[in-house]
Image (cartoon, rainbow, N blue to C red; front, side, top):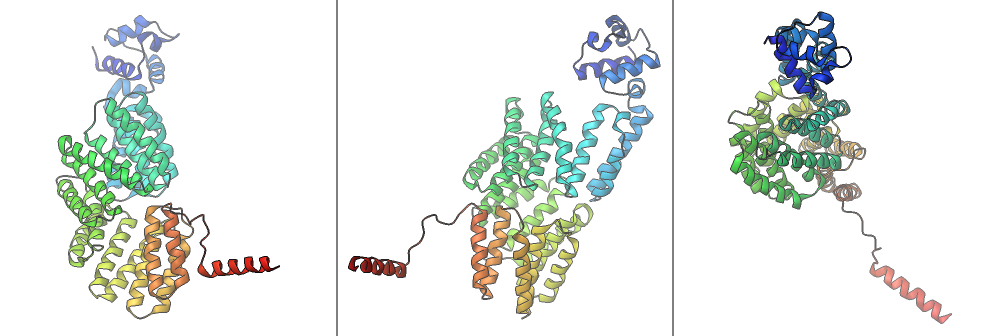
Length: 451
């Protein structure tokens, strides 16, 4: 048996084809059998026909990974992944878009396209990312490739979440999760990361009771069967649920456990993002800890400068600015607020609102109340154009607190009402009746009786 015959048989098996199906009308099944046995060498024309039916290339069947087109493709995919890991998402996207997939074996297609979807997501091109991921996930599910399906589903669930389609994010994630559990892969890293990503969508949708119940189940499963990375992912998302329920002490405990697990060899981008989340929590405790937060933010910034996005770096600036403001370092806080805003483009609406709220706080601390109020109103105007969600509701609440403190009662009332609406709490349907209205109604009734 030759290398060519082995590759032909492997590709036929991968494609789920019989020798008869591969032969078609051009060849006999016995001819295919002889090639796979290493007793016949196909002509270039015959090999091209067979490669086309198998969805691969003649170059790959003849030379394998040593084929010039395969080597170039693997090198290009490797460079793109390196660019993506280093935060150069645009370079990664452009490299992968320039790759001619028709010249390389299909087994490299999924890797290249998944990397392309990740590059689109990092650039905020969510529709493009989803369009790439959907057919990849469909193929993986049809062929029962559980690990690949879990990885792709995690990316797709996160993309739908970021796009604001929480319902579909949860529905799709739960479908794939059920399939994985049926295939017996519960407790693997891929299963736990998908489950924790779905948990994030439940949290954002406001299903906190169910999210807390699911988080407890996943924590037990992770402790029993998960790796360090899988446990870290679950504890991280469980901390978000605890924070959403207002239990900041529990959120802190879970975050610290997640950090301990993920620090043991996790991918370079996970740990600084988790440190950023930890610092956010430390600044919102009943007794804030700005010094401890700055320590975490400093370590996060060092790594995010290498592997993070501009949005993540802006968030790091904003939280550092809040910490400096709590410490009374007002000028440093202003520099950080403006630095963070300078990193963001027009698509990062919610982060820009957070930055303007911080800037308003700094200006208020400097005594520039009119400018502070203008910063708050800018945030209110921008928030008004956003879709509803728990995250935007929390920003509305923060904005309402500040408008109230500055005497803008109407603006504060509107901000609070919007915050309630965005988490699904609507105005009462029964009109409220005041004592004055009761008196007026009685008087009107009395006049009618006399008449």
